Image (tube, rainbow, N blue to C red; front, top):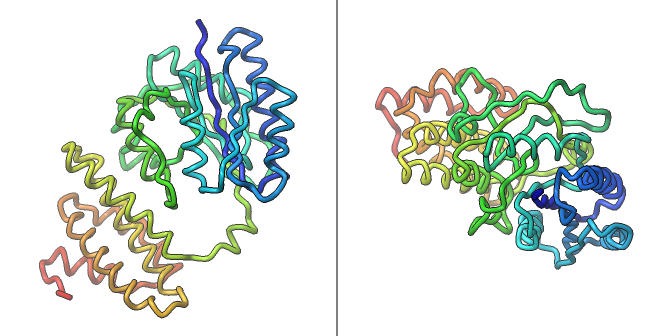
Length: 336
């Protein structure tokens, strides 16, 4: 018997792009059910997160037109809250997330579903590309490989690092048993994805770009740094704690490296923060940086940090980084 697939689309003030994203997914799900590849009970779950525009009405209109669309209306709670509502409402064996301003390749669902069916994995993942609009790059033959949780989430240094994103994957619903996205946090994927990956144990992966992440250039230019961006440090601290609890040195090395990079980057942003609390915040962040570098002493991260540091030094000239790194590794740490 074919499995039920549930695609969760959180919706908030995106009335201009939601119709196209929803239409493509519904059309593809219709084709897959007609061919008997997935259960006719598969659904697209549109989660109206207290939107202030016409997204809610658009969702309801789609639900009236097609029984494969189910709408959840809720008070505004943010992306994590909307995803959690979709998880709670999902009744299928498999679950995927698509942001309402993104779009997917016509073979997105079919490829990811076939990959888990053919390998027995509980999670599949594909490549993606950032775009401001345009077509998908050409997609070749459906090649894939099965990776352990470590090989997927903590690739060798020669390979491209894996971002902790939710939306390029298909998950078995059981991976979210007692697991939800943290409400009120930015970088919510960093709190959650690694736990799902290690629960799965292995991931079947294709490098084909089947997901298009819409990058709004206006939004990027207008976005301002706030202390909420520091949630990335909390998420990484959780990963470090998990790695230590489970004795996973490979994940620990990745998490410590990310902690160093992220802390250094946040120092650069915070130096430009026009707020009376900037001095105190910088003091806290520099203390966190020293703690990250202390932990990094066990993993010989100096070559990796040296390779990446130019990005931060060029954009945010924070002098103490190399001075401090060398001082810590020579044992001459300055106390504060």
